[in-house]
Amino acid sequence: MYHTRPANGSPLLALFFLIQLPLAARPIQGTSVMRLTSPVTKAIGAQARRIAADSLRYELYFWLKEDPQTYLDTSNEIHQYHFGALHDSCVKHAAKKTRFEGRQWTLTLTVSQETLGDIINRYAATSTRRYERNLTIARQAIAEGRIVPAITAGAKTLFHRIGILNAPDNISRTADTLRTQLGKLIDRVSINAPQRVIQGKPGRKPTRVPDISVYIDTLPLAAFPLRAISQYGDTFFSAMSTDDGSVPFDNMKIPFVANGSFLYVRPDYAAMLEVPIEPQTAAFGIAVTRAPEQMLIFKISSPVYTLQYSVNSVSDLEIPADFANKSYLESFLQDSCFLKKRTGQELSDLVIEIQCQVSRYAQDAAEKTVLKVEARMVIQPLQTSDARIEKHFVVHRQEYEFGPAVTYGLFFWESASQLKQLLKKEIQSL
Image 1: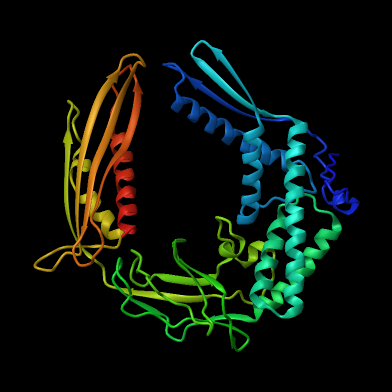
Image 2: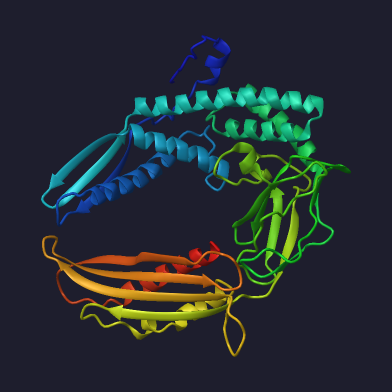
């Protein structure tokens, strides 16, 4: 049993920091094994460390699961966050060992049983201090009837409770009581919109927006953080309710989504917690009759585009017809970016120009052949004041060891997939 005593010597706090290690306590290791054809470069070293760190992640997970008292739900965003923080600390404090056997290089990251215990204890101690501080704030806010501070501090309290592995019974009972109190508060919060349609063209400000308001019972609720998330999981906007409970749509643009797509306006727990995750009410273990949420719907007309596409080979490599023809991009722009191809005399909203260059060359020292696709991409909005986008990318690069001739169909398929995602990202940035 590892015991960390706080600096102030408080026996009560010391009790909170006791972490019972699994019965089969042992060091954990992450390993990367690579076959080298050249000296270890900075890029190769970074790749090996990533592989070893991923291996260490699995070892840490199974190590924690060996303790029947440790509850870890990897489908829960908050559990994922705390597990990720523990893993990052393990990687940082791991002992590194390398071994060469001929051309095989093995990198091993090892976290000893003692170091692992210290990492978990320190994390539990930090989480406990933050838990207690926010619990005091939440209790006071609940007693005074301050709704937003109570929900914010309560969410922080439960967030840090989850970071305490094997929490003592008194912490667990207190957290359960707080969950019940928060559930009753959140049940009183509602997000309303009499008119639920967002109308306009993607990439532009809406021509019609709903009037959204937040209430506590029947009274407007001010300073309540909200986040609008599309049915695809993308954040549309974050906002704070005003003094009259309304939600402003200032400087908002319609995203590139299909007509009839849904948008969900929910409490913004990410803003409350100030962490880069977006948990919903259930992630805290809070039971509510109905979580505050308002569903909106997009009524849009698809932007019209013109596409200019070319592929050039600067080596003796033959370009497959499927990659040389722009039809695969046109299908993607329609199905995944929700754009409409220009026909007839209609005006274009976007002019897209993509120039690809394919090259193949030998790396004699590494005994490899390298294939690379580069692209120049230009997107010119014509009907808005948005700036012209012009970027250059290395779309895809692949190394092949010298040997029998290989076909490159998979390489061009992967290049097409990468190019489509790069194009979508730039369109969505408009």
